[in-house]
Every structure is written in structure tokens, then in C-alpha cells.
Amino acid sequence: MEKVPFTKEGLAKLKQELTHLVNVERPQNIRAIAEARSHGDLSENAEYHAAKEKQSFLEGKINELTDVIAKAEVISADSHSGDRVVFGNAVLLYNLQTDEEIRYQLVGPYESDPENGRISVTSPLGQALIGKRIGDEIRVQVPRGVQEYEILEIS
Image 1 (cartoon, rainbow, N blue to C red):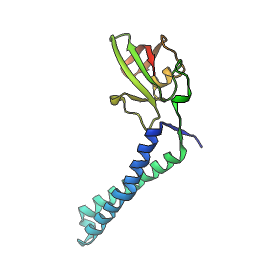
Image 2: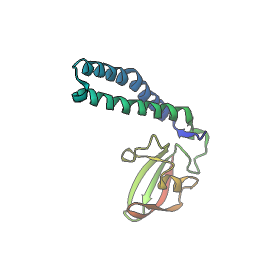
Image 3: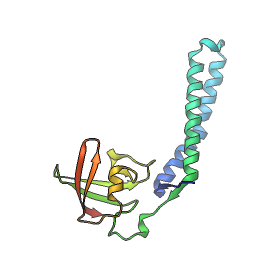
Image 4: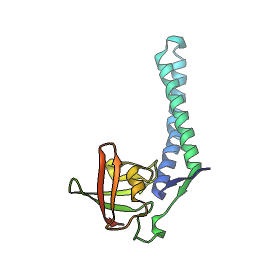
């Protein structure tokens, strides 16, 4: 079984999402199906079909999260020295083309949120950063072309 890396906080958030789906969303959907069913003819009942479609989506999401949580492995960056980039580290980068600094934390694929400074270790930039040191320059092929960065800080 292939493990899926998580920060402690990221796994807790995913478990919370699963609990919400099972204990809140699913029961609400079951009630919506029952309510729509009580309206009579199911073949022309848009509420019933929408609720059944939502049920299918919810069950798929619940199954996916259950599977991911079963494969989850919490990795702590605290146990690694700060001289090399590892999972969980925050990295301050200097974009050599745009003269901008940007900070990213390396997280698992299910925690990725680039707009909030969290990138997956499986992304092109995440893969390029792993194992690098302060002062190293990296080149990364991204959809906009090749980007060049210098690592300014690892925390």
C-alpha cells in the first residue's frame, strides 16, 4: 500500500471533513431523499434526482477520504535538521526572473493550497526543492514556462 504524506494538522483536517460528511451531510441527504420521495412520481421529480445525485457524490467522497486516511502517514519536519529542504518545511524563494520573494510550505497532495502558500511535494516545484540547501538555485518547468528560484531560507 502506497503511503500518502500528511502534516499532523492536514490529517486532522481531513478526518474532520470525513466526520462532517458522515455525521452531517449524509443524514441531511437521506432526509432530502425521503422528502422528495414523499412528493410522488419519481420519474419527474427533480428534487429526488438531485438528492440521489448528491448521494452518489457524497458516498464517493466518503470512500475516497476513508481510503486516503487509511494510507496516511504523518511526517514531521521537526525531526530533520534545517540545512536541507524536507517535507513540512517552509521555504522562502527568490524568483530570479520577477525579483519577487515567495514562501511555500511543502505538504502532501491532499493539503496543497498554492494560493495560501502550501504546495505539494509531488508538484514540479515541490520535487525540485526536496533535498536542496539555502543558496541553491533551481529551475522548474511550470505551465507558464521555466521558472528559476534561489532558496533564501528554510524553516
